[in-house]
Image 1 (spheres, rainbow, N blue to C red):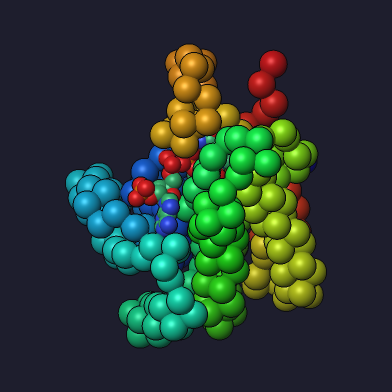
Image 2 (cartoon, rainbow, N blue to C red):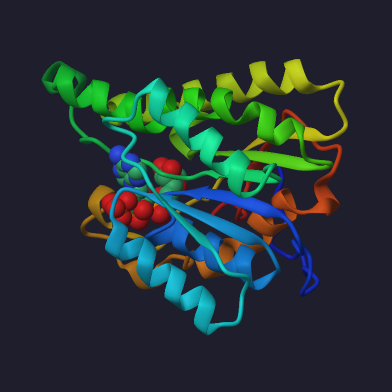
Length: 253
Ligand SMILES: NC(=O)c1ccc[n+]([C@@H]2O[C@H](COP(=O)([O-])OP(=O)(O)OC[C@H]3O[C@@H](n4cnc5c(N)ncnc54)[C@H](OP(=O)(O)O)[C@@H]3O)[C@@H](O)[C@H]2O)c1
């Protein structure tokens, strides 16, 4: 597994690309949406809290990025019909998709498995893996219409090595890695579509605070600091890279 934290993107790296970012209202997704837009992409901001998406929309406009779009969607209640309606809307509006950053995520609870609530387990699986899978299926024709599309699934350290008490979150991230491998193998012969996973590593966000409440957040990289690998994997420099597991930052010493 490798990381591209030293990647130096050109200002127009993502010029004229249409990129969907899920969970774009906060944390890493917000930073990625802003960073992609400031490198030229038209970003579709997907999330469940409209006020947060509107704030990111305004920030992109104020910074002079291409006009973004807002797509409100809550993975918890989303149905297949919602994903197909979404595909139809994006088809009408843009005609293609050059990238998806699957970033929205739910931590659930860090608790011994014997106390894990099955309903919460289902919610975490819905948001972290089932929703993204069926959304990807609905959007495949739009990705196929691109000359160079990159699909990035967000993983985690606990999606590569299981850890006690991380329950559904860890299992959903293992499933993410597995699904990426399956899909990457299916599209492997197509040179216009690639699929990879990216583990952000410990990053200063609300989710990290919930998982490690006693931690000194000042010791963590910010979402903005881990963007080089996000840009590299979304942009043309990673063309041909398919089925690989990436890290956004080197292991912490
Ligand atoms: N931070 C870390 O250290 C770390 C480490 C490893 C992996 N990750 C992964 O990185 C990704 C981003 O995490 P983060 O740290 O930036 O977390 P975050 O600050 O909690 O942001 C998560 C985002 O996902 C959205 N989201 C949650 N449930 C959703 C739902 N049902 N439908 C639509 N959107 C939903 C949230 O929307 P709202 O703002 O509306 O709640 C928020 O925008 C996640 O996949 C996470 O598993 C993070």
